[in-house]
Image 1 (spheres, rainbow, N blue to C red):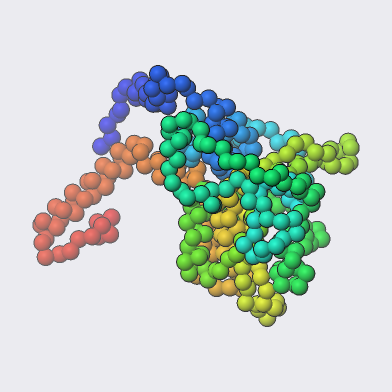
Image 2: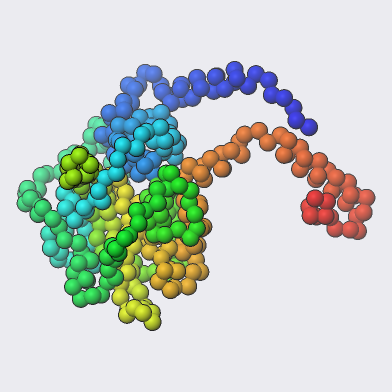
Length: 370
């Protein structure tokens, strides 16, 4: 039986007030500003921008503050705001070969044209708590190294070294290649082509993609990957206005790009060679870009004639469950009133128990009485 809820609006308004108090915390402490979040919680801001599909560090920082640090909620806020923005035009594809590098590493070749650039990374830290941050607020600054020489205007890709011997697949753009589908305007349909899959993965939840990527390395996709190249840097964003007819730069984006190199045993039509997995994310998002590259390669199993046996190779499973907004919404909707549904199931269980008590020798299941 459904019981009407009274006083719901007052309770909701009080919930808003309590939420604001919880977000603010102890008023004796200085309030955390959006500028501080943007500058000092950069990796969180970059994740929210990537999965929220909006490159705007200030709005991402605002969303993090409003969500009290809940990144999934912040992504939801930013994605909802994105839906209100007009579409003014389409940029040209990013030319990542001309990326101004902040970091560039490869696990496949030690000596690279353009060199390895460690840049900012936690890879070589000891993962020990730094109590100077607690006592002084700032960690001691390491002594400055010798200044680096200016990076070349264009840094060749590592995979070009394998291309010279024909040992890695090439992906030339075919004539008449259609524009990719826009997942923000068109629903996801299966089977999805690679351009659509990459859009989905770019917006996908980092934790889910990380788990899928990890599964491919534990024998669930027969994968033995290498980081061909991982790049962090800024790239120019260009558009071609109709009235001009040539490209102009309208700004720069910081991005992380990863190319994974995987073995391929070959087929009747292709010799043994290496294949690629690709990942790209806003800002400094190495874990996301690497996981994306691993899952992208796993999802190409059918295209490459490999058996589709593992979850990470099944595009409908991966793409349908990777979005944090849909996943969070579906799980959290369970908190909403389900009084009618529960009362019907409660009545069903009562009838089953009564039937079982009346006929103790007969087995009763949900299917018998449904």
